[in-house]
Amino acid sequence: MKFSVDGWDPAYGPAFDVEELAESTAAVDPAIEVPTAGWAPMPVSRPLRLPNSVLFVDGVRRTDARIWIDDADAASGGERAVAGLCASYAAGVVRTSGCTAEVVVAEVRRRLITEARTATNISTDTGDYPVHHVTAKTNQPAALTLSNALQESLLQLELVVAASARAASPPDDHDLLIVDGPMRGKVDLPRTLGHIKTHSAQYLPTKLNAIVAELGTGERTPVFSVATGWQRYSWYLRLPCSPAGPWTGIVRLEASPNLDLSEVTELANVSQTLLKRFASVEYKDSRAPQNLVPIAGLEKQLRHRLGAAPLLYRSLRVAAGR
Figure 1 (cartoon, helix red, strand yellow):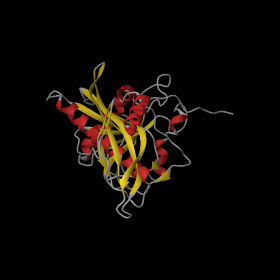
Figure 2 (figure 1 turned 180 degrees about the horizontal axis):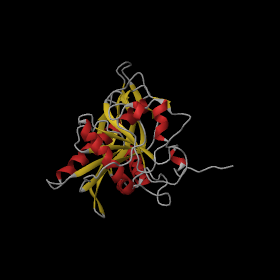
Figure 3 (figure 1 turned 180 degrees about the vertical axis):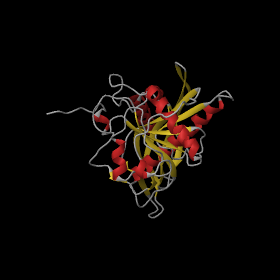
Figure 4 (figure 1 turned 90 degrees about the vertical axis):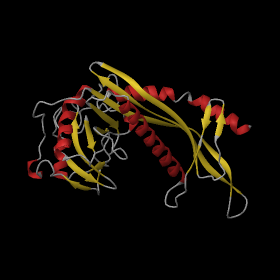
């Protein structure tokens, strides 16, 4: 029997699940760069002007404690127990230039997220949790509402640190910003790419989707457009990796719909040359090669800056008992 083993750590779930990859209902136009009849793996075709520096943006989040708040019940005139989420989250930016890389911005936030109207800020010996009120939705569980609000807070912080890093850049710096994840909420950032490591939907028609598996190292698909609740340009790219499954080392890139097609194809060509420089390797990263080296290093530092989870949990228990 001949077989191969995917280097992606199974603890993170599959980077690509061929049996569960459902065809997306998004409106996709695959013919904006190349007619569908001419779709084929695209190698780097011409000399490129690469950015002087590359900025990598990422964020992390953690639930420090789940709490219950005694809230006034308008219906009965008494009290009811309402769920709350005490969480820490952080976002930062790594700037790479030449052979150097450094964290130029990193910010940590804590927050109490709840729909309890009487909730107030929580002060502990290890930091404060400012309250963020959310509105309950009848069509989704309360836990999901809280989790979505935390994710939105993290997204906003990523925008803040990205703007801070760009403001600190030299005025003549020809840079590129790479966001770990989709471009949702970030389409107004200039010179920016979204980097998606895992695949949960099949955006392309089956015939064109099969071409993704044919990509060689550094090759990409033609650019296509995707419209769901929001619009963006996208393409697939294979990073350097050990031979394994058909989608091993495949990432999907996104670019803002505000760009001209010529600008998007230029970014797509740049990504072919640039991203393989930052691809991780299996003996260093269990999510290689998709988890880019600067992103992996930034994640590690941001998680450290969140603080010790047991200490924060204990301080919340102490605050609850006061």
